[in-house]
Length: 59
Image (tube, rainbow, N blue to C red; front, side):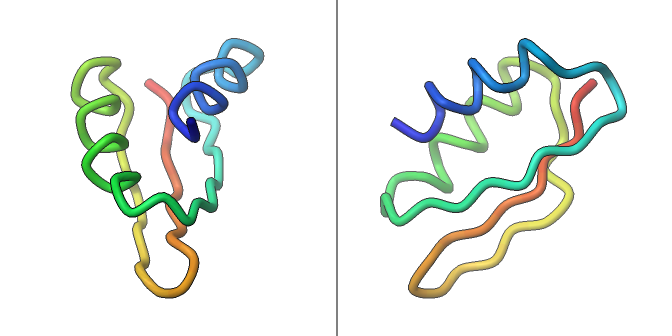
């Protein structure tokens, strides 16, 4: 579900902006990587812990 929310949020953003995402879904990392590859956006940071955190730069 985080990818659906991210996809909706980035519609309001422009290239060069970054979005910070937090998720607890264990599949989030793989889903985010696939989404970034498909859309051309860049994952700038990713940290794993109790909560997964990512920073994505829009292209």
